Length: 146
Image (cartoon, rainbow, N blue to C red; front, side):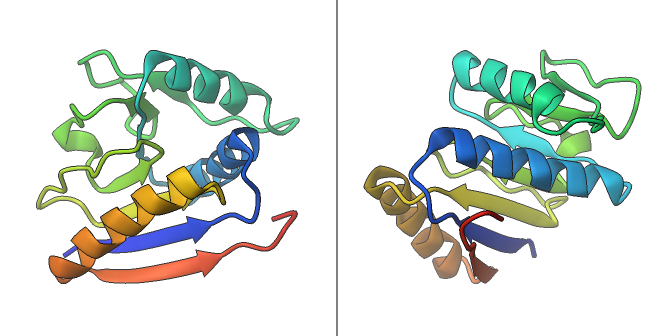
């Protein structure tokens, strides 16, 4: 059964949300794992792709926008829509407004919410859904500057 973690940011900034996502993705990568980042649009994918290259000097996180083919390097972070490949279902980072379909291979789902009402309301709905399914949920309220 997957473990669900909600990260609630104090800011309403989409840029800060992406920056936090990049730091979390880097942490996952440095731990020897990979993840799939679920997004809503090609524009959001391009923004995250660019941010992963520039969010911190000296950082390198191999990543690419998913186009239906698994990358050669198993730790490559994939960014894409709901067509999550089986090979990348262990850790899913949800930056979309939708509720991802979790497979048997899903170990962790990470939800990052900013402090905007729209984002928080969508997060509340997903939280209720996960709770109804009996998933264990952790909520982390992040302090400013983290």
